[in-house]
Length: 237
Image 1 (tube, rainbow, N blue to C red):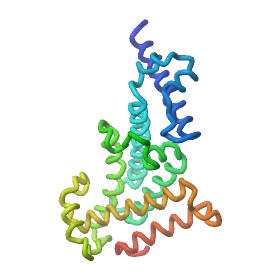
Image 2 (image 1 turned 120 degrees about the vertical axis):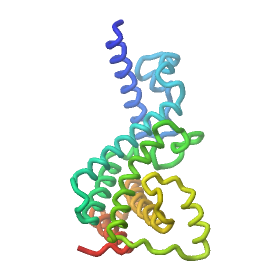
Image 3 (image 1 turned 180 degrees about the vertical axis):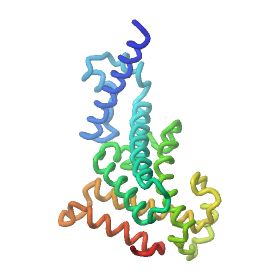
Image 4 (image 1 turned 90 degrees about the horizontal axis):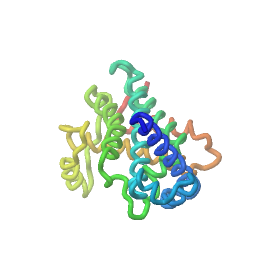
């Protein structure tokens, strides 16, 4: 068989395996993914499917990488829409945050694998390879927006206080935040707090925990993101 045709057929088979795996995740969760069940549905032998993915974890890793890559691409596209850094911080942040939410709501199965209930024996952030790199690429979009805001003076990170402040400063100094290299601990903490708030708001909505009376949650999400910026000292427009 010619090399190009062999490669094309392999790519098509891998794509079908992934499609059926996503269907299993949507129906029963990532823990229920079964290479043998996928092989039966495709009319393949169990041994044949292992030529494409050697284990369930390898398949889940590939799916997670696809999800993080798609999310990072979406966030970078939203970031690039401004075309210039002179755009107001609040407008840039709200656009990136909105793109994050829109992607997650449109990809609930991917979101569940990437950020949801852990799969026994499988840890997304420990599988290595490109998964962590793609996760970092997406998070760094938000970090860049925040760092620009701090460098321009539009954001004033509050000082770390309380009995755990010293321990947190030490942890933040050891944290290898690529985009935040050289930032003081309070600034790094502000970036992390924003990501936590954004991620938490989206998780509640994706997993159906927003009160029904507030659905669709566009308005509550917009207000929460604006309040978050105000808490960091960003002037209201």
